Length: 283
Image 1: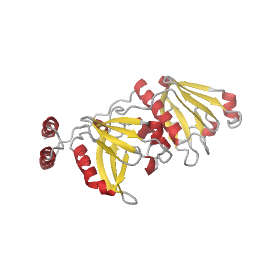
Image 2: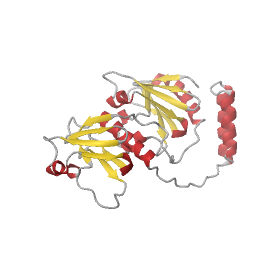
Image 3: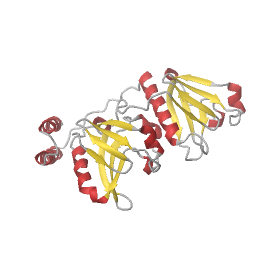
Image 4: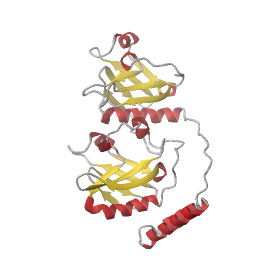
């Protein structure tokens, strides 16, 4: 596609198989966006696209990622505030018609809806590190290390000593936002079972956040990078999902809509032929 749609804090560049999201830098841009820099999101990673009125004379174009497709959103687990959602593009209300064209264009090319069997969006790259209330956390791509602070760590953690966890020993990551009560990052062992973990401040496999410690723009990309590495080292078994047959009327309507976009010049001949064949194959 090759076109760019620019909004507040970000610009979306559309390609035939992906969207490249470039985040702006500046004091008004959320720090998480600045930390991410840019992200290429394959269309296969998206489930839907919506356009809705925003606040104070704006409209919001939002892409909904498929569950399991993006390690950042997996790690966030619904805890991000609306303004820090990396899949929202806020535009002036007078550009609504323009944004709707791009929304229609994206919808016509989406094919995946259910959970993804692997991460499709790249995770933040290691090495990564951040300072928690009770220690420093670092990740080099192969192991996570916690180095305890003498001013904040509990006696339990001091007795256990500094910790190192190889990625292939882990089964997951639990991130609780520093903006809520008892924010923390906990590493989950592969063989955790059903045992109740200790409180984060008593768990040598966890670091505790606090005011100014473990901010979202540092700790969330860290958690996403670790989670992605864990999935690669020990991918979860794919759960077979029976393919549902589509309603012929729905397929016909989508082909009609695709034809309108093609006639308007918003979809190329090649994109029209490929997508039409995909839709017919769903009958």
